[in-house]
Every structure is written in structure tokens, then in C-alpha cells.
Image (cartoon, rainbow, N blue to C red; front, side, top):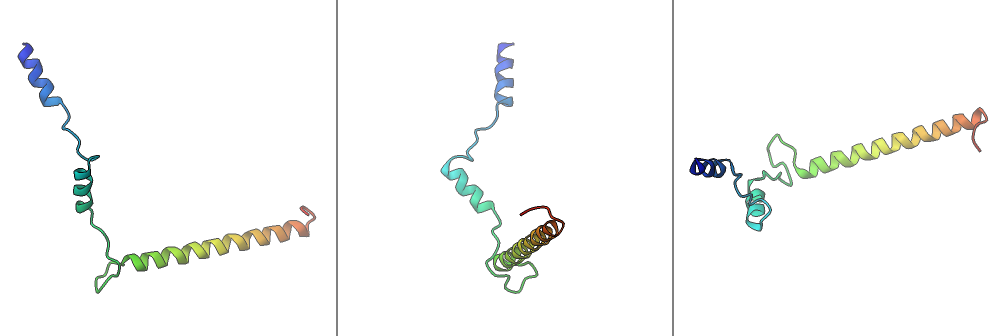
Length: 83
């Protein structure tokens, strides 16, 4: 009976995790599908195009919120609220 328990414990024991070792990190880095810097003929955008899109959208949203703040401030001053 005791032999049966030890066999079950061995089977249910989690495998040793090597992910936090340098060799495990190296293996995981090799498995990652890293994007290309430029798209070079494929239909998928590269890092350069994605970065440009993020910068453009961030700048446009920032401009939108600044304009909204100026309009709200102007309207509040117009009705007498605020300095």
C-alpha cells in the first residue's frame, strides 16, 4: 500500500520548471515569433509601420483632449464659472 502511495506522488508531482533559469529563458526567447523591422513585401505590417500608427493615434487623441479641455474651459468662463 505504501509503495502505491509513493508511485502516485511521483506521478502527480509537477515537473521541474526550468523557465526561470537562463537556459529556460533562452529557450522561450527562441520560441517567440519576433516581428520584422520592415514588412518587406508581406501583407503584415512591420514594427516601423506599427510604431508610426501608434504615434499618430496618440498625437491625435492628445490633440482631441486638449481641444475639448479648451472648449469646456471657454464655455465655463462664458457662463461665469471659473477664474
